[in-house]
Image (cartoon, rainbow, N blue to C red):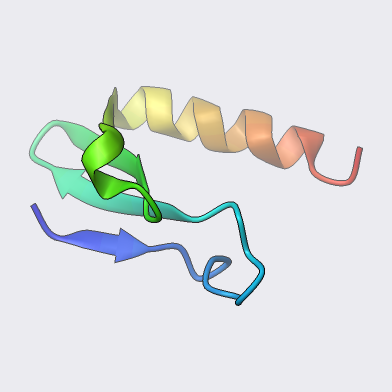
Length: 60
């Protein structure tokens, strides 16, 4: 799987870095600073729901 780092990640002091990988049936998510620490695999619907929930909590 080819992993892609979030465009919001990457600053020197950035402690919250996420990478995404496309799967045939969904999306893989992992911590880019600890890629060997495991991955979370989500269906397209689950990933869309996660993004909606995160966007709903931004700025709170």
